[in-house]
Length: 230
Picture 1 (cartoon, rainbow, N blue to C red):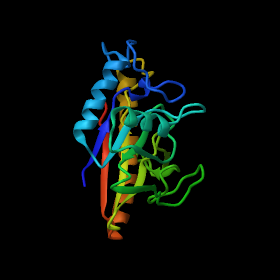
Picture 2: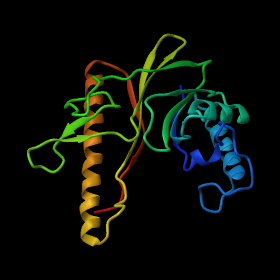
Picture 3: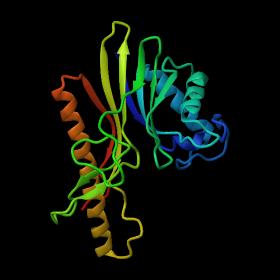
Picture 4: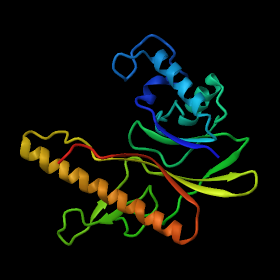
């Protein structure tokens, strides 16, 4: 089985309000690249990968009129991709979704989140990824609440022989210090952001440890952004 992951920069900018492809000469989100040019290039790359499943990071956003699933299925249809069905999990709080493109002739896919749901107060261990995780970020003996802006996608692939593989699609970022007004604030905010990212990765690691202890075949894939150096 061929499995890939691809962070498609500014993928969201290539689809209209009704999930249609914007194949035109207007500028994309990428510097000096037209939307039609970027779509054509992506079609070439996805075709060359010829994957049974692709974990797409920064997939197009879904909202009232537009669907992440419809957008990616339209993209697959346009370029004749085998991976033509789409699975999504919990919604992102940004314009960047995590989605799985897969070939339904090879595998089935389902969203299978683990962990307990949490309230606003959160929980330790490995709660569900759309909830909240408690961790002491600043080493003051008091735990803080950590959330994913882009909840990891937990999916189970099953092939025609009945064998299953669990995937966790991840996009974690240590964000740039937006709003910082001087060097001291830049350092402070950067450290806070990096600590939050570390807590998210600990949360993810807890889930991985639980699944491996249960004997689950597992693959973690996606994008781990380190952010600015400190």
